[in-house]
Image 1 (cartoon, rainbow, N blue to C red):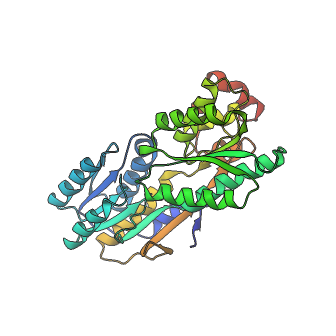
Image 2: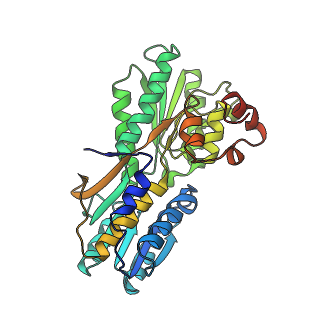
Length: 346
């Protein structure tokens, strides 16, 4: 499997292909949950901006299923009834979404799987970050850090996965498994977090702290919400310092935890990049074109982007110098001193 590496020109590149097209039609943008703030703060704004540029006469309907499979099915069916020509779908349940893909395609409606793949029925296109690569990268980063810190071979780590109904979470898990299998460390316990809910990750981590105590030398968490839940569990248990914990999504809360030293890494993946790519694919479908497959995943033509791992060492360059976040947003209150220490602020 190959993937496309992000560059400074990536956003303009993915939006340039369909720049001359002037189609029209109803387009749906269906997101899965509100456990992560990314959908309202980044994904939909990025998609809306792409569609406004490429298809100003298109009507875009955005809805979030709030982790409810039945609600997302209702939203999807409503779009079909309203005459949607293309639906961008980030599924709550990847297996259940296969039926939606089949139904839409039987009516001539194109489905773009977004962020999370749909293994059970090939969508017309899939656009995402390279999720298996993300899992491998965050776990390998943690392993390298533990080695550098002199953590002995055979020491224990916890693995906190995402939702068991999310195929992207499964890809992240597979990447983590691969990195840990190559490492000298032992996985003490592993957990699939229902709906990616941070409180469930925190509750599970608290139980493992009671069970394993100081045997836990690191935690591979699949995203910033589950990682933040693990950090909260260690703090509630009075563990100081907190063992290194991974993350993914570069949320504001996670970036602040990295600055304070309570979270080891995250993944910087500006969702606007993928959202713009999705808008480009939508417009090609509306023009009757066949979008180019950069790679193939689950028998689906795909475009996958490779994001960057962020730690305290490179957070200034990857997040602040790159303009993804500003010091005004992140370097508040108790995090101001850390920002000064890292050269983010003066």
